[in-house]
Length: 230
Image (tube, one colour):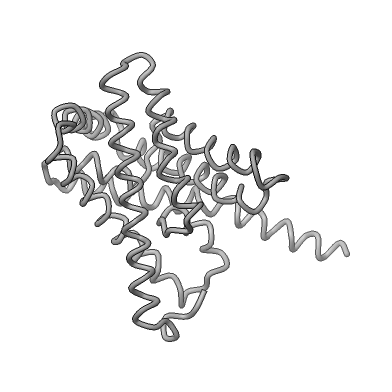
């Protein structure tokens, strides 16, 4: 990655637009998952988890910028590039907000919005919600890194790569682990503001970062160990 001072205005604009596009795909995947949950009840969660993978799959295939995906690069990106995480998250949030606004204008609103409110309410009303948010988002971050790394570490760049990208996403979506960007969709549909929501969002961001850097740092330690043995 280029240091901040070497990024042109056009490069910055493209980076931010690709971050917004990631938010759009996450919002679409989230809306599809909420629709499935509302329509199919017992099987809705499983179907919704499968539908949600469209967002991450599109992001990886088209090299968009997603905050939770960029987290895995923290150990190697350097402090000069850490600002990109904030810009990326803002862009992701803008994209999600756009999808939420569009959903309000479609017939899906009557199905998706109440379901989104129910998800957000359940998260906020959970016992020990703060600990739950942190732990859940750590697990999500770990799975996101597994998905992102599959592109480079899959033994074959076809079926195994595709499954490696999609399966971790389907798992975290099915389990309901906290994805800091996807959570924005649910809280927008909730239509409320409180410091509890802010706290929940911040904890999910921290958790996604912690979970997302576990494997990269372990990998760095493994490589250093291998170098000492040689």
